[in-house]
Image 1 (cartoon, rainbow, N blue to C red):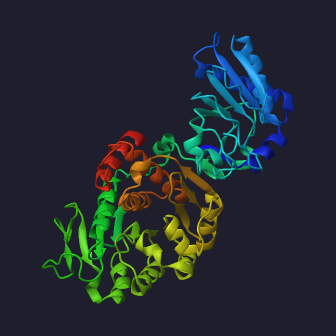
Image 2 (cartoon, helix red, strand yellow):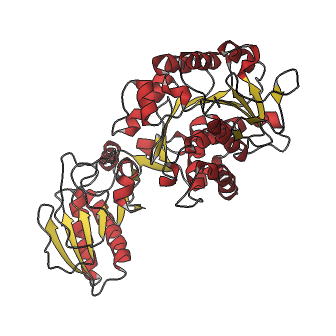
Image 3 (cartoon, rainbow, N blue to C red):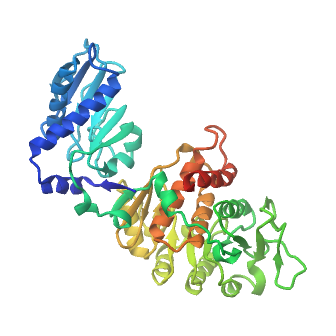
Length: 480
């Protein structure tokens, strides 16, 4: 995991540094110069312009300018408020105006043509915490930041405006602010974390040791439950059971209402390994708790995918939460109408509970939109519910009630497709059923697997139905 700092934490790291600021600026300027030479493709004959601000970022840029001159680059330097000479045939502009501590809007001067930009710390005019606009930043080709990633590079407009991000070690220690290992206050999940943290089946495992039960698939929405079931199986669940609301789910001749091998929900074929059981066993919502009591062997429940909406659905979900001792993932319809009642039910559970809202579902739960500060929004939901809160977005934010946060930047616009969230719920359910490790890490790693898998699909015409098989392939690569 890579540590991620907020601007306030980075300021504290700078303040606690045992070395002189001048030495740190020299190292930072050297890192900027090396990155610039890489973008320029060499030194002699190249031209660069540095936009320098009044603080440490400006000092870094000025040091870089001097070092680039020594390598034969023709460098000009301008104040952050000065215009760039329009007649300059520049090969690179270095944005060293303001860093992550910017507190007022900043609009840089106009760029002379389509010249590449190297941003120092963060593109000037982006909020260092949220990635929101604090002015009108340039779109950087690359960004070099120091000591650790900053949250504004990963959130909001950060991924779009920062380009390729490089972290330079200049001798600062961040451990005092954010900790280490699984105790990191805030961290970005990497491919290596999947190999280290993804739970494995034991050599003597049997199917019930990693069983997932999906409760959803109402009439007209059966595809959601089918996607979740397929994803759970591809992510390693040893047994997948789907229970649909009354009138949905195949009936067999067996006494307990099961339809094994070849079970299906009308209109949405399930994998042949999936077992289907109707929730109507004892009649309506009243039968749900009895259904769960019969299946306490499952490792995780995934509730809400195509479940339907309404008071009766909420009643059933709340009662399931109270009865089940298994880990529970609440997604989609289980979130939309819950509000305070659902959050209270989550807070009373001892077992792991995971909430996976998009922005609209977050507002239904919390009574307010997440806003620009997605770190704070996810933390509020986790604290209020006592659950792990996974706030969906271009960068997924996963927060635990103890204040720790994990980020996943895997994936792209392919995930902006109906049904991909159902696949994510199945992957999380399988990961929780498989393992007994740190639940926050498990959920965040599952989100990273989901995003990484999507990158293996076609850029155009990608469908959620493509994703489960890609999950299995991604896990093969990442875990091995």
